[in-house]
Length: 435
Ligand code: ACO
Image (cartoon, rainbow, N blue to C red):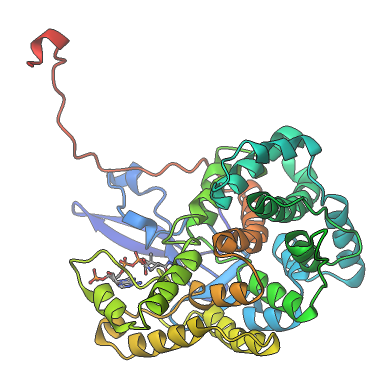
């Protein structure tokens, strides 16, 4: 379908001696793409791009990212301004509604988050079915998928109910995350409270106990808000593309987000925050010799990678990492926490950034490199780090699912391939296949 970002400009492609014209799309920041949708029909060729490194899957107005300049903005607002001035709930509203909320809008949205904070009591029994050491991401993904059985609001036009579904998801994922932690500890569940803000409520559900009441610490709440905001969206990353791809088959929001949670779990994606802490911890346990980790990361025969380094899109500093690194110092200072892993991380970064291997490949620390140190300082256990990432990324997944559903150019996601297997062979019956 023609779109206003099709400027009329065309590029010519010469294939098998024939010139084909393909339309050009230009984004608001001047990014250009060639629309190749008609290429196969007119030439017989497809494009091949493993890992989709050079493939645009959609036109989107949610997040802008310039990996060469290190710029990231949500709905036109610079990530640094949002992290400095907003709460996570405001940014979730921005991502999902397109504009920052007015005071009234924010109060209505917060009321919805409060109203939807509990999970159906029958779902509590699910927690009992998991073995004690179950990965929290596995629990989160299956519980979120199950939400559609308890809240079956998918109609022919789910966008009619999208505000309700999004608020429900944002609020319940927070409760599920905290409950899964309590369950893993064997402690009684702490229910959400109406008088606490989104982040304070989460921290209270995580840390309050009958024998040690939790006192909300506003510096911890502020740090959590900042971290969640910085994880809010990151355009077509692996988990968000998964949410869009699953949703493109017209699957409900809960199931699509559950698939995104599974994608985020991977150590090359959101799971890296947990892996970074494990790496820093083992450097610490081994006497702080991080240089051998740098050498291993450079060795082409060793599959080891310096976790928390490198990014598909950023070829300079990840702007989120800069903010988190600074917040790390502030939070640890405020909470009077001394963490030797922070010093190791800083030294590791310094050495890597001066090393030719990392310079030549433009490998910089990413969002996951310092985030775990803040989570650890505020008491979040390492196995919950990726769950925290999921909590932060949720508004982004919802915004993309919604945009995909409403896109006039929507079609089921279905890439092609080049087949290189055997040519057609006659079928061999079992008794003629040898021993
Ligand atoms: N340590 C050592 N070498 C690395 C690293 C690293 N962390 N990352 C990339 N490289 C090297 C590769 O070995 C490759 O070298 P080569 O050209 O000699 O073969 C080169 O840099 C390019 O790497 P690719 O794998 O092609 O980069 P890609 O864009 O596919 O991968 C990724 C990006 C997955 C993030 C990668 O940098 C990585 O594995 N990093 C560590 C895991 C991590 O921190 N993930 C979190 C990313 S942020 C997020 O998802 C929230």
